Amino acid sequence: MHMDKIMILTTSKFERLVKNRVAQEMMVQNVSLEKDLAQKQADITYLQNQINPHFLYNTLECIRGQALNEGMDDLADTVKALALFFRYNISVKGTVVSFEEELKNLENYISIQQYRFKNKFTMHVDIEPEEKKQILACRLPKLCLQPLVENAILHAFNEITTGGRVTLKAFCTDGNLSIVVADNGSGMSPEQLKKLDASIHAEHVEEGKEHGIGLHNVHRRIQLLFGKEYGLSVKSFSGIGTFVEVFLPMRTEPFDEE
Image 1 (cartoon, rainbow, N blue to C red):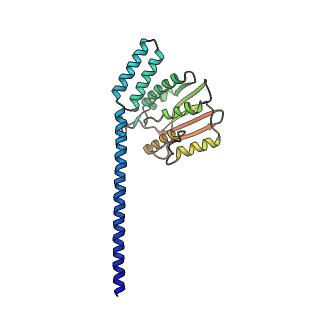
Image 2 (tube, rainbow, N blue to C red; image 1 turned 120 degrees about the vertical axis):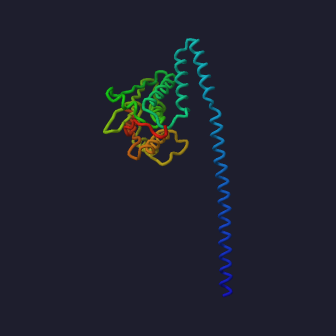
Image 3 (tube, rainbow, N blue to C red; image 1 turned 90 degrees about the vertical axis):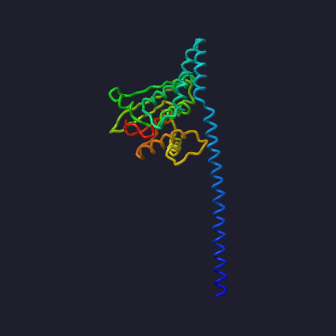
C-alpha cells in the first residue's frame, strides 16, 4: 500500500515535469517563430521601401528624355518598355489578369530583351482572328507568360548568336484555352526533360535551382486557381526545340482576387 502511494506520487510528479517541459519548449518555439515572422516582415518592409514607384518611373522618364535628345530612339523605347514592365510587376493589382494584359507585359519584356541581345531572337504571336477577342478576355494568373519566354531566351538560345525564334500560339479547345510557347533552340535530352518535368510537378523546388523554378511557380498557381486538371506540360527534342503548353479553362469573368 505504501509503495503504491509512492508510485502514484512519483508518476504524478513525472507528469507535471513533462507538462512543464513541454510548455517551456512551446514558449521557446513560439518566441522563435515570432522572431522569424518579425524579421521576415522587416525584410518585406525594407524591400518595399526600396522601391518607390514614383521615383522609379520619374527616373526612367528622365533617362528616356535624355536618350531622345541624344537621338538614341532604340534606348528610349527600351526605357519606356522597362518602365511599363516595372509598373505592371509592382502594381497593387490582383493576382488574376486578362490574357491581353499579360500579352502587353510580355511584349514589353521582349522589347527589353531584344535590346539586350540585339538580333539573337525574334518573337511571334499566333492567335486565330475569330478566337482573338475571346482569348484576349480570358483570365489567367498574373506573370504566367513571361517566365515561359524567359526560360527559352536564357536556356534554349544560350549557344546561338542569331536566328532564335519564340512562337506563342493560343487557341480554344473544348471550352479550355491552350497557350503553347515554342522555341527553335537546342532542346533537351530525355534525361534533362525528365528532370525538368519532375521539378515542375514537385511539391517544392529547391532554392538555387533556377532552371524550372519559374515554370513550377506558374504550374502551381494555375492548379491552385483552377484545379489539378490544369497546368503546364513540356515537350522537348534535342536539336529541335522545346514546347511548353499552358492549359487553362476558358474563363472570362473576373475573380475575387482582382
